[in-house]
Image (tube, rainbow, N blue to C red; front, side, top):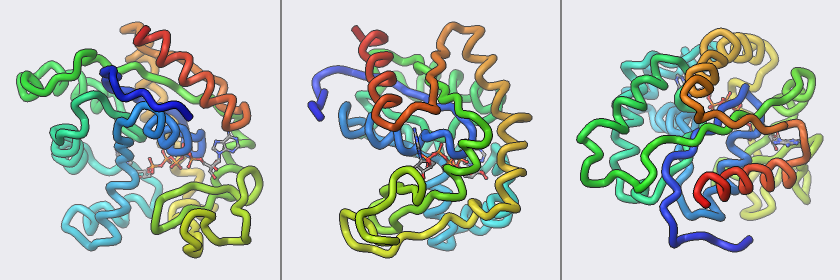
Amino acid sequence: MAQETSRDVGPVVLLGPPGAGKGTQAKRIMEKYMIPQISTGDILRHNVAQGTELGIQAKAIMARGELVPDELMYPMVRERLSRADCKRGYILDGFPRTAGQAGWLDALLEDKFFENSRPTRAWPIVIRLDVDYNQLLLRITGRRSCPTCGRIYNVHFQPPRTDELCDLDGTKLVTRNDDRLEVIQPRLKAYQEQTAPVADYYQRTGRLVAVNGDLPIDEVTQRIFRILEDHHG
Ligand code: AP5
């Protein structure tokens, strides 16, 4: 895949329900444009694994499939976006997830906090991945990931070459704690009730582009790259 390192990309927001393919596509955008993937779910899971204060507070909430309160999310996201590697742009995977978070992000991007490090294109392009409900269930229940490198697999659609082992480093793959059947429904409900309205927020401001996320992984990637090329062309 040819890499693009010379241009500012600005913020890219990936929206979509659990299992839509946000993490999968974020990694591909990251590799092509050399901008970081900022997955709030991954950062939270890392904090849970490390037993930090944030992780201790978030653990039970995530295990129930509910959203972590904004007062825990905002300092975490603010700190991450202030790092030097975000200068040319970044991919937000899992944030914003409520209309309140979307408003907060806009205010942050306008704030003089970013005066000296504002990427050329400050407003996010928002890409929503639309996926059929039954497909989502298959994707979530079949997901496995590598605890060492973070690579995502799927026993139905994207299996590793050797059963349950990462192709890249041979680590035994794991199933996420919140991919248990009893947690999937609350996660999908939280998406419908709290995150779906975020798309309306961006639609009103003309920043939303919907992509058919039911397509095979490579086709979704091609569509996303085309959108980013048009946006920055
Ligand atoms: P988070 O980690 O963000 O999870 P999520 O939004 O539920 O999304 P997923 O990671 O489940 O799915 P994805 O869209 O990334 O799909 P993936 O690429 O893996 O959040 C977890 C929790 O953290 C939340 O419930 C909440 O508690 C908390 N949290 C996080 N952010 C928060 C916030 N902003 N505010 C409050 N709380 C927050 O793909 C899924 C599977 O499908 C994989 O197996 C993959 O191989 C496969 N696949 C992907 N694309 C395709 C395709 N096109 N065709 C076939 N298979 C595919």
